[in-house]
Structure formats: structure tokens, C-alpha cells
Image 1 (cartoon, rainbow, N blue to C red):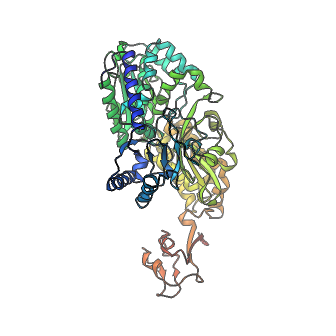
Image 2: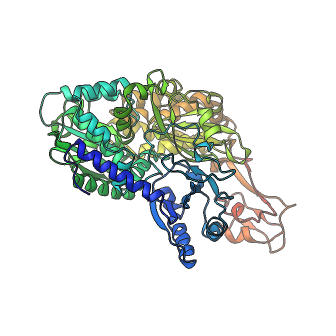
Image 3: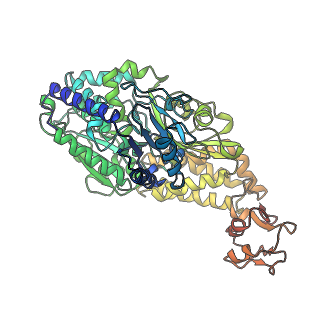
Length: 635
């Protein structure tokens, strides 16, 4: 591919890429597209792809293959799309090696492209196809229909390792448009859009750029924060794996606006596929002349380096992240000075997260007013969210700001599986808070979530059902943040440890009622006294748990009861003599030797010796269900 020496040359390259894209879709041989992001690969998509290709080879059917990123329907992984000649591109889900042959039989032998594995057709307005009776559009799928995909616009639809696919969908046209504007005009457009930082803080992006541009000094830096460390969060990873050039184009636009020549992508080493695809994308962009000297003949010079992080949660904080890039231990510092004035190596620095940058090309292309037409109040545009936990359709979505938690969980996510009650949802990861079931009508925007004691954060949502113990959940997330504390400031280092000690006492049935007040006081002290955002938000899960589920804490303390039967010291395992058939499986599995009884005789559990591991309950045959977990009679 030739270099794009100027905007006109880029347009010619885009035309060629579009032509090649249409030829790919309209070829005479079937096209097989496999969802090969981390979620798909972990669900054995590679094996399913090889299985289909092997079946086709055995039947002498010629075909073409390509990889795509994550479409967001993670619950239905692995996903494979098949484009038969003159037919729609159809998405198939829930594949396994055992149903590959039947899929090939249906689609290739019987021309039945609409079958029990079909999720829907991906509409391609550029090409004409024969209609298929009863085949629904994938965009009518209940998980996709309510979405507005801007940051995720290409994810799951293009090959992330082929820049021509990005170019065929208008890639880098927004960069050319931005370079024809004044930097101040680019900043003004971003300010009109209302885009705020999608990494959690929600600071207005255009204002942040303006501060950095006005900061004195010619040497400035731009950092993409891809250090996504929240348990249950995978938005940034999915974008980097599915559409890395969207992030690179966003960085180029941002670099032009603030006037810098060097950028960094700080991405944790735990994202090997994202790093691989970023490396490929950077090489492709350099070869095309979109990184380096005199980009598109504009005189702008800009390049990007990747810094692999070691996985420290605290390095998601801006000043700790910069310390890590500089080769120092990732620890936060006091502010001011703010990074916009004195950041990386003491130079003015702008930091945006992956999702923020992925929105920029569309904002420049369609205009700030278009982007701000989505959302509510001061929260404009869309937000990517990861749905995890007790939800029927876990995955990745992008919705307009202002959609309620109720809509997201029950309409998009399909509700809680097993007909269990929804207890609440934890938003914002370990730095967020638990919003109860009776407040699910709250709109998802920065201000509304803050009012409920939680935060938007990076966008992770963990839905919890009636089986989750709120004390145990608070302890889980506090354990995470306590371990991830860098230890620099006393409130976070010592305060979180003391909070965790109280939670452990409560879960073990050893606490007194006054411990609730002590826990609450400590939480507020840590929140108000910590140096950085990690310590300042670490108490959120505990504070919201106490705010909305205080009676559950009191049950643990006053009655020594865990209503959800989760806290080990407050539950007991018993064997129903009417159901026990003496099969001996429970006795064989017990690591503590706590189960007594001869073969074919009723077994019993020695409560003193029982370590409450649950192994006996796990192996008891489904048809007997003799082992049960219940509230401990003596705590």
C-alpha cells in the first residue's frame, strides 16, 4: 500500500480499500468470519473455526476466512459469521465442536442459513443480497437494538489486523478533516460535543485539552490510559482488540489539538492480544505515513510508543501511571501541579483513556452537536458498559447516557437467570458502589450515580442476585483495593486494612453492633484523607452496602446469620436422612474426614470437624440432593 502523502492521496487509498472490502463481501466463495478477541478465543472460537474449515475442506468447498473482534454478545460466544454468495452475512452463536458439522450441513448442503444457531443477519447496505424469509436483522437483537455504537462502531465487523478494513469504513478521514482546521477549532468542537473522560473521573475532554495546549513549553506529551484494572471491566480491552486504529486516530487528533509530538499507550501486560494488535496497527500506520514526520503533508509530526504496565491497579491513576512510564515505582503524587502543566518528565501532559479517544473520529466527522444529541444533562454522548455477574446476557454494550439501570439489566441484559431476584448492581468496579434493586430506575450518568453513592468509573457493571451476601461482596472488593494500595499514604494503607479486619469479624460472626459505626467512621476517614483516587474511592462499596443493606450487616452481628448462606462460619452442612442412600461419594470427597457412615447406610456430618468447604454438597447426586446448606444453629 502506498503512503498517504496528503489528504487527497489518503482519499485514493480509502477508495481502493473500500473497493477491496466490497469485493471481499461479494466474492464467489463463502466468507467465514470468526470472533477472535479474548472472549471468543477463551470460548474456543479458534477450535470452532478450524472445525468449520476442516468440514469445508473435506467436502471440497472453497472458502475465504477472516478474523473480527468482539461484537459484544459475549454470552453467545463463540461467534462465527458466514457470508454465502448473494446471501446476507449471518451471525451464528453458541457454537461447539459437536454442532459444527450440523451447521455446515444446514448452511452449505441444505442452504438453510436461518437455523437454531442463527442470531441474526448483519445488514450491509452496500451490497445486494437475496432475501431470506424469517431471517431477522442482528440489529434487532434485544441486546443490540437499544444500543448506539460510536466507540464500538467497528468492533466485531472488521479485521483489527488489517488497516484497509478501517480505511474502508472512513478511517483517518477525520484526522484529515482535523488537520484542515485550526487546533483551537478542534478543541471547540470537542467542547461542543460535551465529551467527558470515560475512564471514570468524567472531566470535560475539550477543557482538559485546552489547559494542556495553553501550558507554556514546546515539548508536550499525550498518553492513552489503557490500564484497565477493574474486576469485571473489559471495555478498553475489547476496543483495542477489535478496532485499534480508532484509538490511534483519536490520539492523532488529540495530539494535533494540544500541539505535541510524542504519545504513549500505557497498557497492562495482561492484555497480550491487545498489545499484539496495537503493535500491528502502529506498524501499519507508520507504513502508510499516518505516524512519523509531516503527516498528510500538514507539517505535523507525531509518533507513539507502548509502555507495558505490570498490572498495578494504582497505575490507573494519572500521576502513578506517569511515574511508571518514567521507570519509577507507580505511586501517586499530590496535585497541583496538574499533569496539564507538569506531567511526564515535568512537561505538560494530556491523558485520555481508550474509550474517550475512540469517540473522537466520529465527533470530528459528524460534529460536536451530533454527539451531544445523545445523553442527558451534563452527561452527553454514549457510554460503553460491561455486563457481568448474575445476568442472562453478559457482554459489552454501548448506550446513550441516561438509560436506566432497569433497562440495561432487564431489557438489554435479559434479567437475572434462574428466576432469582435481582439484589442490586455494583457500578464502577471496586471503586464504585452497590446500588440496590429498589433504585434501579436511576439513570446511568455521572451525576445520578454519584448521588446514589457510586460512580460511573470505567463502566463495569456487576449484577448481583439474592444468593450474594452483601457483607462478603464488600469484603471481596475491599480486599482487592487493600492489596492494590501502593502504601504511600496512611489513610489508604492502614485504614483499608482496619476496615477489612472489621468486615472479616462481621462475616465470621465475631463482631459487635458498635463495629458498624467504627466501620463507617473508618470508611469516611479513608475517603476524605487519602492521597489519590484509589484510596478516595476504595470505601465506596462498603459505604453503599451500609447505606442500602444495613439490616444484613445487623443480621450477621446480632443473630449470627448470613441470609445468603455464604459466610462459612455462619452456615452448616447437613445430610437429610430421608434422602441419603449411603452412596459414600460425600465421605470420599471430604478432605477433613468429617463425614461418618458405612456404605449403603445413612451418613452424618461431624459439625466440629467440618471445614465447610462444600465438597460434599458438590458431589451428592442430583437425584438425591441429600446434602444441604443451612443457617448454623450455634455460631
